[in-house]
Image 1 (tube, one colour):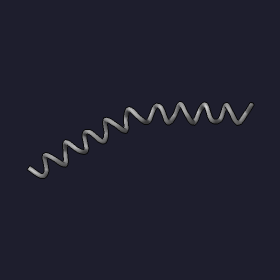
Image 2: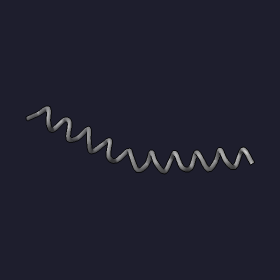
Image 3: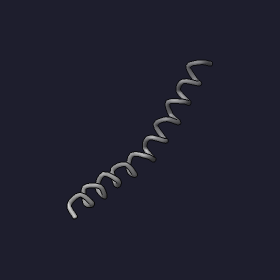
Length: 37
């Protein structure tokens, strides 16, 4: 039971991270561009 819950939480965390990561990468690109101006 506890193992299944842990797996579900890991899956949820991975899903959130995979959704957030591209936004963070875009932000760093915009930030570098802003510094160059």
